[in-house]
Length: 60
Image 1: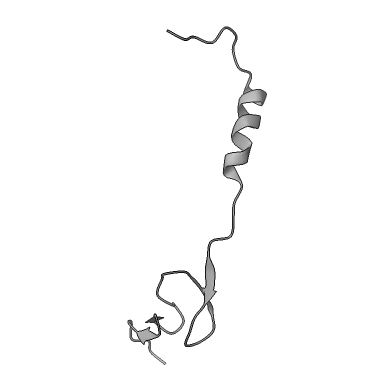
Image 2: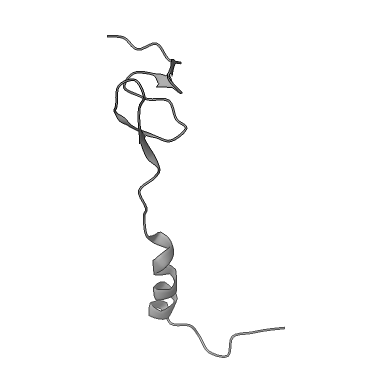
């Protein structure tokens, strides 16, 4: 059974994990109706449309 010979220090462990937490901007696209930025494949919160069609009725 494989067992580590020496203890891995907290600094070394955290350095290895540091690259996993880098945030990337999610895929944002402009809404076809109102032009506001929306997450790709999501309903627009501003106008309630998805794929050019009104899905959620918005109060004016």
